[in-house]
Length: 152
Image (cartoon, rainbow, N blue to C red; front, side):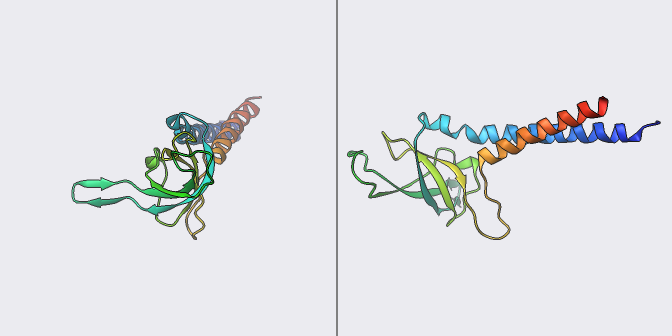
């Protein structure tokens, strides 16, 4: 082959496009959490109160702790502390003590989804579906652009 750079460029373009598609698919799957909630929700901060655990054949999902208005008085100040299992607990690695950003249903504050985690411990990566969505789009466009530039 007279031009090995063309083959290398096309392989790298295909790899970048495939990686971007993988990241996009994962980010979109995790962003579906708001669809589970059914409404846009009210954004709040909380923390993981308890990690997932197993007791014999029973698996207990993780729980998050957050403040929201009481169920019977939605106009009251956010003084009630809820400790609930998020609707999308399987989408995030939730370990005890990790700060999280949540959205809860204003009509029923007991329904909550995790938007993203904010893990500040060394060696742990914070997760944000929006950031991963942005990176996925970037890699897809970069791979397609690299492929087109290599063929021109």
